Length: 127
Image 1 (spheres, rainbow, N blue to C red):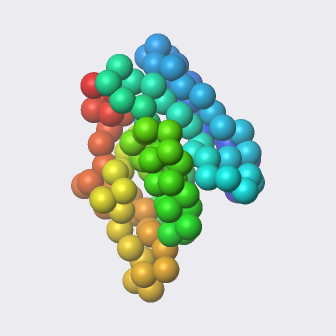
Image 2 (cartoon, rainbow, N blue to C red; image 1 turned 90 degrees about the vertical axis):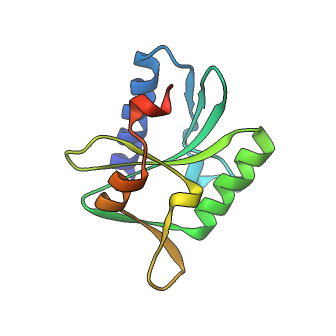
């Protein structure tokens, strides 16, 4: 699973760079003791701190991961975003306010339909 995560992070990294948008990938972001996003993206009018997720139809994200993303974004002056791509779909970008809590309220759940309804597509993110 870790290799798929790294592969999709690199895929998104290249997607931004192909549009000439400065992006850095924070390798090992999930294994450091300090909060760190997967990608930092410099748009003309803002900086995005992005946590990347991928999966088949749904994917859970811990509340701790989201809290750390928020902490980093605040410290860096960035906008926290969760980017998700399900198999055979395009990337969707969700603001934290649009994340859906799991039934147990312990995590957030990223689902294909919810992401399609609430997430922005790549072209809208880079405007």
